[in-house]
Image (cartoon, rainbow, N blue to C red):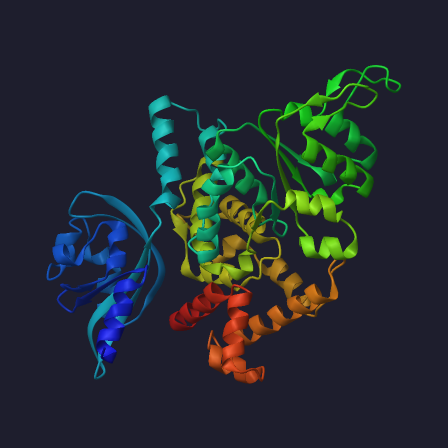
Length: 469
């Protein structure tokens, strides 16, 4: 196989859609990844982009802009109608093709993000057909916000692909993710997919002396003022009980929880009778389970009983390619909540979001967009609307490493290593070889570390930002 054949083979197998045109705007190449938006090479090669996309205007075309200016257009959301009448929305990046110093065409990378914009269409249809008042709470939007898993990164595609398997079993599930990564969204999606009722409880939100009575229930007369009341175990009978921040449970209560999980039997406080329950247990922690075991904050027998199924959610800093679709999702939501008509986010503001490290993960991004939606006056969110200065200042002051309570030495060292690798990758604009040399690491080791810390998307984003700048 020649080098040219090898390159062509790669372009055909890559999942991202690729389309190339010449200076006359005729399509010269389309790979198989373009089928995601209903385009095949056999049907469009040789045609003008204006034939394939009949509603496309030259003034709005990123292809035309790139050929006319010679400058790349990165991370643009485009909605279009194909020649078959199909309406699609894609995240695109368009680049010039230059030979001998002259622009001879352009090529575009794109991913179908139609699902991200579907919420806005559904809300608009619901409002017009049902005559919903502007200030009425958007039940459909809230439901979608709680169950919609947004992300183009491989790590989030893996999470989405795992939902049907996790929903199709009654075995216990242990879920780990940093604060704000969306653990409750995942649990809601599992419950929705399984058709089961769901009861959720954050264990850290209840005083320790009340936890047992809330979980197990009470019997009248068991203590002063006690009444017959079902606990969460009984209330969740026939469905799912989600216990968030389970590491907040005292060890004595963890032992009692273990017995319920194992035997599926529960006895109210003050009662002498046991009752059988049919409950699926999902537990979540924002501290890595390994650290909890090593620090003695979680019983090993409870851990092994809950760890039948396991899912780990990636932090937002390791999947910055998801920032744009998440932002568009939140814009759609707050358009309905705040009665706005914001169409998107300006490029400079998007770069600001991508440079932030997101210690609060998706929840922090949601708050940023909500704040921006309250300040925005035009149709696009600007950098000024984000008002990031105080947040970025706090982040810059925190650049020096500080030990995290509850983490083992091994976990602390891994965090330091990941932070140093990310800093060098940022300094070298995603150049892995150069970053490896600066850290005095073999490139093979550096590539392995990037895979270990799931930084592939982060490297890709840095390279895109460097191309843009």
